[in-house]
Length: 282
Image 1 (cartoon, rainbow, N blue to C red):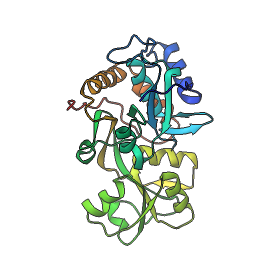
Image 2: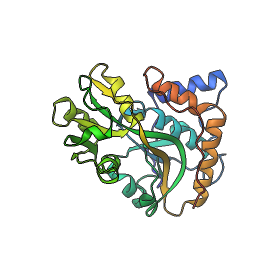
Image 3: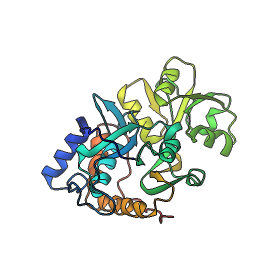
Image 4: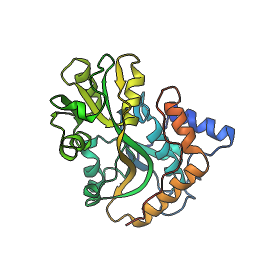
């Protein structure tokens, strides 16, 4: 889908773009306003990102900022789109597949874990980052140190996410599931004592914990892998190959590490600094 309204990237993403260009690490996306490879260079490109995840995709003012936003900006540049040709759309966990299927967005870069189930309805490029699942609790809660301690507890996860089911269904932990619309709602439930813990990717949890120091604690007992992919409409093999090439270049040039430092450098989150191996496009 192409839209005509042009939006401008503001805040942290623009600041990172300037910083990386100034230090010679990478131009943002290497875009050339229409001279990129493949199908790039249309009027605009519509990209779904999160609006409620600090450090990854958080709406600040009129535009989102965070690691996923920076990754999306770089990839769009490699496809031939300048930052002011990107139209951002909020992609909640529950609507990512439908947005791609209905043409609401051209791609999704929104902590979108690659799974076989999702691959039945959408395509993925990547992964561009490999996170791990972890648990967030109140800062004064020392009883929960890992998934096994969630027996009989109330566990929150966002609608459309598989994180809580990984614990209950796959690991066989007898926890009571509480589903919220997004992780911001989970944090509110944790803050008022309605749930005992929140589980999802350690990147997401670290961002929330850093927003309110001393209130929440990441258990830091990671388990499983969450391979973040770029969601594409089904049948996007050529575009997938273009995006995979952009991801490889993003890591080779050091842009990905700079973006991670920009997002998490002031937190105690030990993010991965090595490039993941991308999957073959199907």
